[in-house]
Image 1: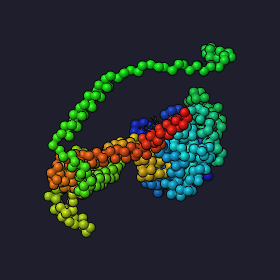
Image 2 (image 1 turned 45 degrees about the horizontal axis):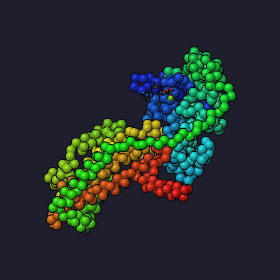
Image 3 (image 1 turned 180 degrees about the vertical axis):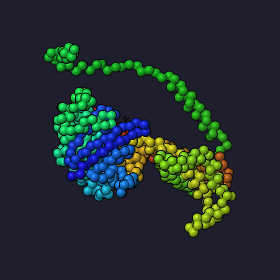
Image 4 (image 1 turned 135 degrees about the vertical axis):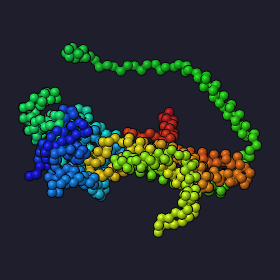
Length: 253
Length: 315
Ligand SMILES: Nc1ncnc2c1ncn2[C@@H]1O[C@H](COP(=O)(O)OP(=O)(O)OP(=O)(O)O)[C@@H](O)[C@H]1O
Ligand SMILES: [Mg+2]
């Protein structure tokens, strides 16, 4: 079975700052893959590389067996056109720390936007799916609300529904609960848990160790642009082998 | 330490606090604003003097209402409105294109936009109008190959000269306004849109521009009002606008100054209408940025009437 995401020696720098220093990892289909690590270690950057919001400088990164951002012919790599990059992003959903809902559209319009605009789906079909998705995240009654009229937790659940509307094969979550009040975190995690149960492949950057332990199939600890430790959540979170992992966990737990 | 704090906060089974009794309503002598009264009286007195001076002057005020709906004047009004709208359309469309070009990563595109803005903002509109009109001295013919060929003077009608002169100039200002608007939109919005698979163009049209509008619309309303007044310069290219009409009528009827007041009154009417339009447009684009839109003046009047009625009903 091909890996859903495969990274081999991925490097990324912003000018002089070397952020990713050779990342190797593999995410299997249907896996819930948790990424933890201190601030500035490059977790968000890596996630953004996966859907080509950032361009990698060296190494190989592929999603579902296809290179991200390039096409290989023989020994040569050809950069993909903007249109082709956009096409590949359809299959990858992304959820942001700060929600990034479109503030000028209602909740349901947010969810319908991409299917109608990108897939040219009929409005009625898109609306029906959007209603179903909003119901799934527990917000059927908030369809007509604008984002400013929703709580943080509700906004994040709409954002998840919006990503799901494109029927992605992979979901990327960048600290989806970090901007939320503690009592709102649970609702969002519940939605993510149910997604995991349905077999969605998910890469989750998170500080919620409880979620990682309970739902995660594997956990990777990143520090300073490298993967320090990877394995089953029980091993990494309860029996870390490396000093750096130990000291990080002692701070967050 | 924490134990102590907790104990201090839990004084056994204290009774719940009872709501305090409503204190006596304050009755005090309000501050008197004598200064306000004095200045109001002075202002009114000065106004009366001014109006009186105009009324006593050798002006035939009756000519203003007589000619207000004169056919020639109305034609001038229609032309002024028409050239204002056309020039603004050119300005806004070209302005958005220039703003996008200016923000593009391609250095050639962004320098072209920069150069355009530099030139058209750096020279007076009046000069630009004259240049368009007189470009026939440089180009005798306009020749677009098999599509179109004519003398410059018959191609460059007063309307076209006015449109190019005003519209191209406006585009430079609109470009700066649009650029500020586009830059005001959070980068996370573009990112979210791209992550959903939306193309650059779709992202701009569906996500960035609608949000930029909130920043773009208020200054554009001002530009519109400015444009309406600036059109009075098109007299330079012999376009028959409101001011041209007013001075023509003034010349034939002998009421020159009166017709200038008439023109001023028409301009006031038009700009007032635009101001009202601007208010409602700004409201429309505030959608989603406010939890609840403020009431329009009309709605305020209605709710006030309504509450008066119910209040009276309650008594
Ligand atoms: N566009 C950029 N330009 C320059 N430097 C950047 C850019 N994006 C990220 N960086 C730098 O890359 C490093 C890693 O950032 P990244 O956002 O990936 O960290 P992170 O692990 O997600 O941290 P956090 O937990 O705080 O979100 C940081 O030092 C940051 O300053
Ligand atoms: Mg981050």
